[in-house]
Image (cartoon, rainbow over all chains, first blue to last red; front, side):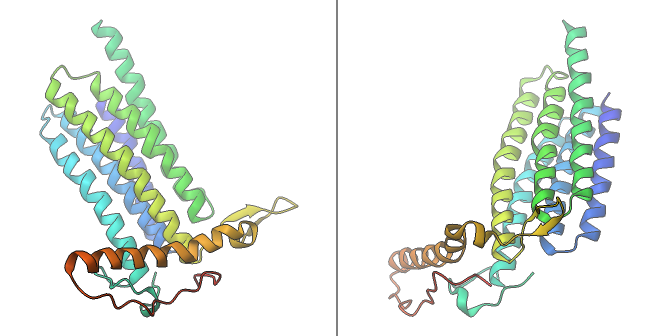
Length: 96
Length: 159
């Protein structure tokens, strides 16, 4: 049954990759990247169960945390043009 | 007991994979960024939740179950936070939501016209939050404040 679930999640992952490649705006790509991260976590967990090696779950936890930090960091970069913005929005151009 | 758990696990895993696929299809077929976020929330909540439930039925190790629950909680919390930040950044960047018009056709809608307070909120609190953040940062660091000339245009559209 894990093989069936893995097949479904792999299909969803490939569709998200399609959106990440096509996405007209940067936000579409970012949303697709977030989804890809979620699907990859589920894929990791399912693969760990399939091969009966639950160590993969630890990788999944790490990836979940990194996924959110990555999304927020890219959003901040889009808005302020730099990661260490100097809290003056008027000075920086909007990008993305 | 074991057979019932297996059946529940089958149903949950297949259902979770199904909802993941539904979310990914919606991500490809929806017309604009906000409806796409709506579609991905399906796979981020129902898909992940059902898949995790299905895996929980297949383990008898409490450490594995605890890790699965941690993954579930982290995904739920961070998914909401990331979606909020993404939607706000998209609105702030000038993306306009698509709404159906009088004849059912899709048209871009300036949400600042419909919700004037939203436009004010989009433009203002960012600046005031940043000013507050700068003030507290300056206090903690002992740096004198130098943000008296912070641009403050509450009524103006962000872009």
